[in-house]
Image (cartoon, rainbow, N blue to C red; front, side, top):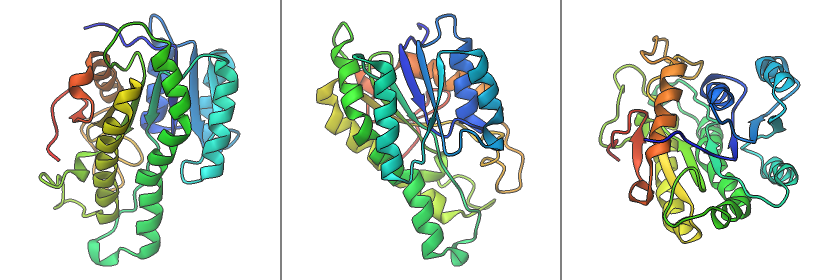
Length: 259
């Protein structure tokens, strides 16, 4: 299994948790990407301090202002990324930004449902649309046939909580709005895989494990998986994907997750 080798990657929600972990691992690769775009809502804010420190040391890391629930912000981010890339495309789009509101089913509200769905499902839809021209350009500029994450890919960070068959952890926390939004994200991933295959773009939904992040600990329990272990596992999985896996729902160890 080869190392994931990309010229350019964009990670959303990159100021903390899995997003920050992904950025750190890309920077530490033997052959790091020429461009690593780290999207976050407030690049100059306190919550992005660690990202700012990394950008000061690594000229290939560019922090991009990006609010995935805002179409105007997404379009502006796509234009900015396009400027940096010049005539080349974007190899890898990782839709990692997400949110959760820990509530019992009976306490869910229209506002919570709408906000969660907009960030977790509609945001990745809009991101795919806005960055499609750059992804297509990367696919066209890559040698060889077939699909791979080194060529052009959309990776949607989903959750086993969105598995209708499994419904993992219901006894611990219900989180209906989060579960519903991730189930929708899984369907989006399938739709993207069908629509974008002809353009040479691989699309996959990835469950990162139950990870020790702010979001992962929202239920009040300590998750079993570290950010480092999750990210290493996910990058190993991404390095091995081909057209056979486009449209799949996999976990950080490469196992198929039931829909």
